[in-house]
Image (cartoon, rainbow over all chains, first blue to last red; front, top):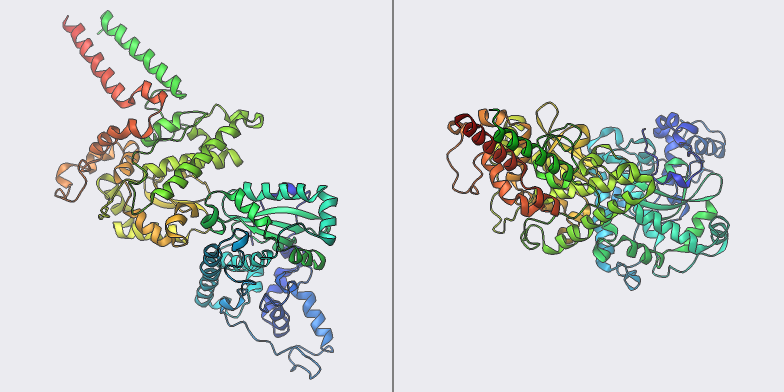
Length: 295
Length: 326
């Protein structure tokens, strides 16, 4: 899988470790279709709105480890035996390939963000046409390829190389994350451990905001601007091109801003800087804190 | 032939041409490429040959002229904000000390040689200059089929115009993220459809750009929101095939007369725009719009390069003949 590194690599003093190389994820990819691996991954493929934690593809929780945990939990039962009565997990269900089911329900009304600058038309277009459009496209692509039958969103993201399938899947994931980063009650400044870490690394929230805004405004072409946590438990600002996801590089997402032009063209036309200002009024710091603490 | 009058005239012409080339910032004769020896792109003669500080080229038509296919509002943003921002950003970048090595390069040279942020901005300036050249008004929404040399080459390399149109449209609609779709004259002499992500330009591969469609979202979001296929459908109606032919003519001059003999031309199409019946006529017609489309103080002083050559050569010959006879 030939991944491209995020463009804002200058923010990071080291090269991120590709989980595919490190944890042998590629080796276990073929085991993804085994019944127990399916059960475990099915828990990851739950509808993404159920908890924030399930949104995250945690690189340290590789299927290999999860499989072992599940194996031990089931009392060391062999893979071919029927699930024991003590097991509360449902029998493995292959994913039915309808990706409209993994699009997160919008956490607010379509006009919920309008008071703070993101109009109903912008949100409706972005969610109903772009976000759901990726799900429709992915459903079609997967239906055409028998090798992809039954794979969940996360399985596709972990196994597919850059291409139409990965792009659509990644955009579904990114947009799921993005909608939760915004809130009608958002804005202001972060609180708690996240604020402490921001102050420790940037001196002040204002300085961090300036740097994030510069990265988001300056990103060339389509992409996303992320606040991530590195494996060293430090924060970093990275931008990714097009549909790339930093989680696939061992970086844990805290917050994201969509800088594809469709995210702001209705309300702000070419003025991406004004859109980023509006983004700061919408940021859902509770969600960001949750991601920061759990990661 | 060695009469003093002839020698003086020839010498004056040579010095004048050197002066013109210097003011344009290009080495060599007017017929040499604006790039590193690559083919001459007539359409970009003025803007490519110029150096920083770059300017927004004037459009050949009013902002309302491309309606209903592309609205005036789109043009206000696309040309007046996005394109202008690329021009200003490029000029600002070239003022920075770390970009000193790019400061004396022409736009073509920047597109072919630069990297990083300088390339991004320079290529976007070039791409948009070219994109505006590719468009012409079609307020009635008439069918817009290719004519001239490019029509023959499309039929030769794609089988039919419809096959080419399908391939080009599929590339436009399918391109993921921001980018451009190009019809190029390849290094093997065949036309092909290529895609360039973000600002990538086929000049870097030694291909000659003939036609481009901008598929960055800002090109169509005002008019059509997410409906890129509808934008591409409308774009076909405003393609300026004259411009495409003029991009083609300098690279296939030997081909143009042979493959375009009058006997092989189809009967004149009453619906065809006037003056489009051959590549040579297309070139002449294009030059009629040349100054107004790409005029700048430098070019206005320098005049038309081919006309210069023709006039000066004719004058020299006449004087030489006069010298011989006298």
